[in-house]
Image (cartoon, rainbow, N blue to C red):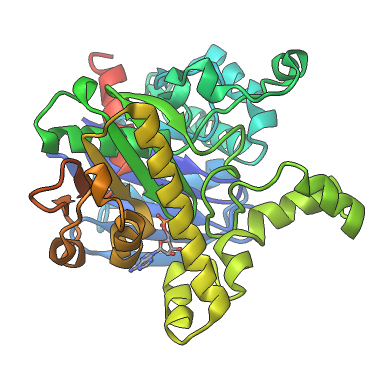
Length: 400
Ligand code: AMP
């Protein structure tokens, strides 16, 4: 079966085409600047790359252009659109409506729509991708929604409740939802494979550290806590997002700086985090260079990130009682040996011992970087959210 995975943004549509039988990503592409002018990027598994400019007035036009690429007689990877058996969509927020991936029908579309107030940028974009597929693919092609929040629907009330008046919470759906669920579930399952145990028997702390970051406590294969909240601002410091701050700070800024609610949102989402702390860049690589040159703000940005990740690992260890493994994934988690070393440094008495040589020798494959004597395994596992979405899509559409 060939499955197309779609990640639709407000002005972009990224896709990846999988041959499930061969477990192979045949091609991937990105339609960018939709509604502005239009740029198409395309790459096949054989290494062929193309970049073209053509008008992309809307998501339907972008998807039509993407289908033209993957079916092109010269550089395509499938003969025609009918070879694509199903479509999997990344959906940002599933609220309380979706605790698993789900086949898309009108009721599911309504559910995604109901969550728009919780994800005003992401959910309308996902809906545009779904509508474009309905218009471009034949009616029988099944579509599946995979929500970033679904894996965290197992959080117990003590972890997801905010201590606000109950009536307000009920009225607006205010609670912790958690994010990066597809990634945490994927690396958690991979860690279970490495541990040689069923996922349902594993306690795992999963650290997804990238431009956006969150940490999950997984108890016996279920998410029981995640550092992100009702929005993706809460938790550890991120590229341009603030992570945990005193809840009175937004109103403080409104009063003292005369900012509007939208301005506060913009600052918290785009000017804080590693960028705000360092004044250099949201990208850890740039910050590492500045820190090495003696920049105190850059050094503090790294110290803050390390401190917060360490703090949550400690908190989740306490909540879980023990962990079989700690997993590092995403851009920073997979690539920064320094962040992993400093985060786990000093945790020896909690049974966490890193093998420094293995930590430094990581080469892009899933790896155990714990010392032989470590009671807790430490893994680096490259995340693959698109593959996870494709697998869920296959599971839900098999036989359809
Ligand atoms: P992601 O959102 O998962 O793509 O992660 C992006 C972030 O990963 C970037 O902003 C960088 O901060 C970080 N990153 C990627 N490669 C490296 C590296 N070699 N060393 C340190 N940080 C890295």
